[in-house]
Amino acid sequence: MKRYKYTPNNLAAGVTIILAVLFVTACANNPPPPPTKIAATIKPAATVSPTASPTQIQATVTPTPSLVPTQTSIPPTSTLTPTSIPPTSTPTITPNPPSPTPTLPPPTPTTEITEQPTPTPTVETPPSASVNVYETTITIPTYPVKEYLTEQIDPVYNIPVFYFNRYEYDAANSAPTPVDYAGVVLENPYLRLTFIPELGGRLYSAVIKSTGQEVFYHNPVVKPSRYGVLQPYEANWWLATGGMEWAYPTQEHGYRFGVAWEYNIDHGSDGAAGPDGAAITLSDTAPDRVGLTVQVTLPADSAAFTVVPKLVNNGPDNAPVQLWTNAVLALTSGSMSAQTQFVVSADTITVHSRGESGWSVPGELEQAPWPQVGPTDLRDYSQWANYLGFFVPNQNLPFIGAYNPATNLGIVRLAAPDATSGSGKLFAFGLNFPDRSYTDDDSQYFEIWGGANAGFWPKDDISVAVGQTLGWEEIWWPLAQLGGVTWTTDRVAIYLSQTGDTYTLSTLVSRPTQGTLRVSTGDVSLLTQSFSADPAAVLQWNFAAADETTNIRFVDNNGTVLLEYQAD
Image (cartoon, rainbow, N blue to C red; front, side, top):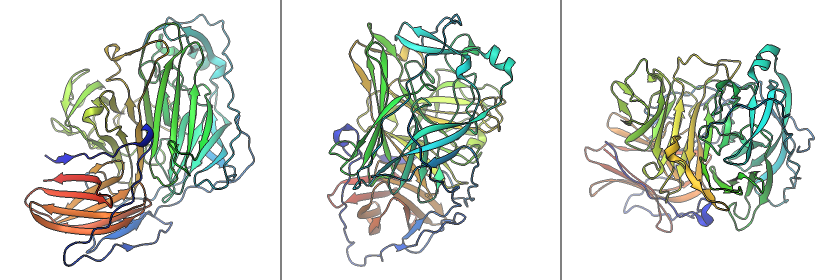
């Protein structure tokens, strides 16, 4: 059993990760030499091997296809050798160059679909901005959807709900055709985030620039699935397009995943984005109903981004709501890997749903130990005999994430350090799940959720009074070349592996950092090392494994503890 202490940082203005300039502390008599820096190259990914002294490792993978500029307008358990990531042909992203559950009765299909507003703001980037904001076109083969939708107002939320006529859709035997979607890009030196306001305001793409790797699942088609909360079942049309979606006002994927959202851009200020950062606020609101805004902030110097959903009840009555963010992930191109490792910083989970055959995982609303359930280690996706979804309360869940050792790529979601309610959730199909009707290439994905609610059940609905709001903050940090995830805070992520009598400690920082690493056991110091780190490169140390608990501690130059972890 591992023992740990989570030491969070304070979050300025409730929406940003705090930047600290780190203090360099030398060891007593014989300080080790500084880390050796290895320049980045673009080639098949290199294996991270233990070294006698700290080493800075930069990503090495096959790049994704080059992007062609065009003019548009806006309408872990072990260290494995990574494989290269093959490029994908669709969807394609063509950027411009940067410039300065209530159950509803089925509707009567007489109402035509209400045309959603097309986002129209002009994006202008100040010449001095360190986060570039620009327009893009994303071309995705798309099945006809709008032609088969009818609208009904849900009286609980006074919100439009669209029902799908699957009988007519299936009879038409339609094929997908290429559709150009207008997108908006926020890009700093470490991340490139691409949003598609037309498709539910989703964050469609997150690329780690040092490796060119995409963290989200990308369905090769936009295709209506049968998943959702509507009755009858055939009226559902949730789009398993991939990326990060904003699910409200009901449980599961909610109502507004496939309609156009409005948006605006905030450039550098003293607010969430910092002086050189940028934020996009995606809006699905109206003056007479329940609505939602989501602000996604990318600081200029950060490899992580912040998400702040805020639901408002502008309707005539109090409303029982559910509010979630949902990241649809693969951590590779195409289908998720059987080698995927799930990382949950908790000892107990509450099962939402699961397939029955093939394993002994408890049923709905029952608790189960994490990670071992009978002979199954739930961290290891290759051992999943069926589908499974589960919740963990935020106050018991400093972070939740996943890592694919085959591509050396991962992601973590960090709840706000002061979270006293809400939950994280993880869902995956299992390797042999038969239904792949949501796609055309049999690819699979998994989901990591964050929410204001404890679960999807009616008892977990939160009543929001007229004029009141509901929201929270969370941080998402894509990780590359770390080898796995053992523990993370919003500033430091580590992966600790052991070979014989030697530990190898691999480390990433979310912001440029100078500081000191101290490793000790009892009163004995195993390692004291000053370091200078950049988010684009892994730092790595080796030290002797001990029989007693080993304490790992990163401290900045203000004396702030960035991460403290105890390993047995």
